[in-house]
Length: 389
Image (cartoon, rainbow, N blue to C red; front, side, top):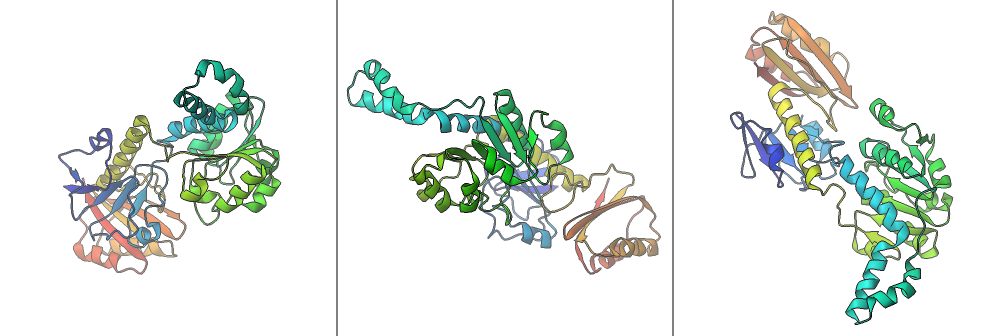
């Protein structure tokens, strides 16, 4: 039986995907084979030797020590696209509240009522302070055309906006699902220079940190509106506060508030609601549970952030799953050891991702324990698992 530990409250809709006859699941599980997590911080988490996989019920994995997992041969999954609709809807909402000052107007009306004023009488005189432009006919720049960015770009065209999308790593699937009405920007400066609204939908890494900074803001149109539902560190707080004070930026909507940015002028701070819908939480939990189940039972990897996707139908009675460094002669060394044990390979798949690789080998024979030990001793091998049907 596989043991799966939950570090956050995971939707029951997802947990039922783990067969009770095969999986023990709960927050009290120890010596776990897998972990299901949402936002719990794991950088100081002590990995048991039994841990083989971590599935994040969401897209971002900043709470997980990816490098440490890779070195330990632990697969890290995320659930791209499972929360895309929820974030897309919030992005549309963010564009509207950044333009029409709906929140400020609503707060003002409540203040009038609390002061004893005749609300029906004062609103006609006071509403002029909250006037804002329509989004129809304006230009939107979408930075990052993954599952969320493409949906945001597509719906913006339906709202009558001219849309530019920028993503140097645009996938085939994303390209096929993107509307023809979306203009592909070949460089990010095209977004900065031409857009009335800019929305961010990229992961946080060393290359994307401070995407919005003093230099990028200088290129933008006066009065630009910026929306950040991806990660707080994509925007330099000091730079955007300066731009808000000067009027260069009319409004900044962020789903990642902190004490500094929340108190700045013309900031709409949302309490990290991007994926906070019942439907999104259910979708993420189902996807995460299915991925961790398929890996533990079959060795298949889909949507891993640190290892390549390798999914193969069984073609033998025994399956060897090997996580290793992406170095020369690895396959030759593995197959040589199998042939010495008179084991014939029925099917094999190998893929790499950066410095790491994953090899799956199907055979119709028992593999001797000594052969497994020999494979584990090959320089560069990180994890070896033996599965049987």
